[in-house]
Amino acid sequence: MTATSPGSSPSCWRPRTCAGVSTTATPCASSGCGSATPRRTASASPGDATLVPMTSPVSVPVPGPSPVTDADIADLASAGSLLLALDVDGTLAGFSTDPLAVRLVPGSATAVETLRTLPDTTVMLLSGRDLKQLQIITPYGPVAAPGPDDVRLVGSHGAEPAEADADSDGAADVLTVEQKDLLDRVTTLAEEYATREEKLWVEYKPFSRSLHCRGTQNRPLAEAAMAELRAAVGQFEGVHLTDGKDILEIAVTDMTKGRYLEWFIGATDPDKVVFMGDDTTDETALKILRPQDLGVKVGEGETAASRRVADTQEVAEVLLRIAAARQ
Picture 1 (cartoon, rainbow, N blue to C red):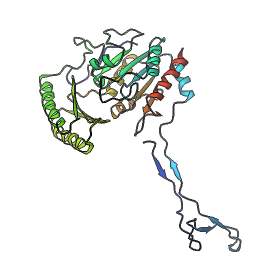
Picture 2: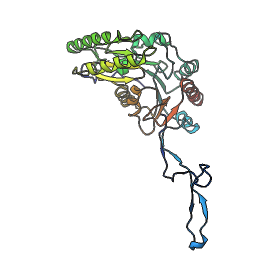
Picture 3: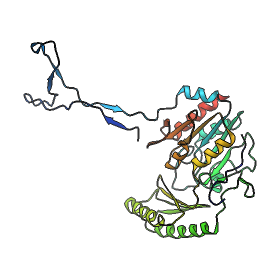
Picture 4: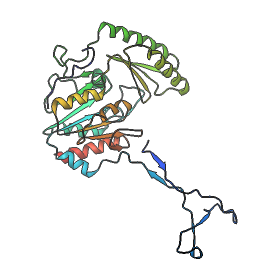
C-alpha cells in the first residue's frame, strides 16, 4: 500500500455496569440477622402459598469491549491486505518521566519487526510525538518513499507523515504567519503556567505545545494550573485542545489521528485495519474504523473500541499472535 500524505488541514472504566432490577433485602425483624425478608409466591390458591427468600441486588453488565479472541486473530491472518496502525506511548511502549527514555516493549519490537516483512502487511506508528522524537525512541526513521517492508512513522497526530513532501499536493501542514503567531502566544502562556509546580513541563512540537503533569509532587496544584491554562488558551481563536493522560495539548492545526487514518485508509484501501491505542487522542482513530476492522483499547476508560487489552504487555502478546498467524 502506497500513498502520499493528506493535505487537508486549513494551512497546508472499565466496562460500565448498572444495577439490575431487583428487590432490596431488609433485616429480619425476628432475629436481627440481616437476612432477606421472605415474600409469598403466587400459587393456585391462597392457602397453598409458600415463603421464599427475596433475591439480593444483581449487577447486569453493559456490553463493552471484550478481549481479543482467536477468531479475531484468524480473521486478520486471512486478510488479503492488512494495515496495523499503532499508537506508541502507552501502547507499544511504557511511560517515563523522561519522555526520551522510553523504548518499545521487547515483545512489541519483535512483532513489529516480523510484521513489517510479511507480504501485504503495512505497519504504521501513529503517534502524538513529533518525528524527531519518534526516531529517538524507536529504531525507525522517516522514509520519503516507504516500501512494503518499511515501518511508516507518522508524528504529531498525523500532521507529520514521514513521507510528506512539502511541495506535493499531499503536503504536510505548513504553518501560516497567523498560526505561527498563535503558536507563539500559546508557548508564552504554557511556559508561564509550567512555573506553577516544580515538575510541570512544556513539550514543544511543530504544530502544538503540551503541558505535562506526570511526576508532579503537588497534584492538585498541577491540575489547577492545567485547568487555568486550558481556560486561558481556550479564548484564542484557532486553537484545538486535547486532554490526554497527564497532558493538555494545544494545537494550532486541526489534524487528528482519526482524520489522518481515515485519509490513509481511503487512499490505500486495505482489506482490514487494526488500530491500537490507550489515550483519548486515539479515540478519534477508533471511531473511524470500518465494520471489518478491529479497534483495541489499551487499559481502562470509555472507548469506541470493540476489544480491550490490559496493558503494553498484552499489546505485545496480541501483535505476536497476529504475526505468527500471518506467517
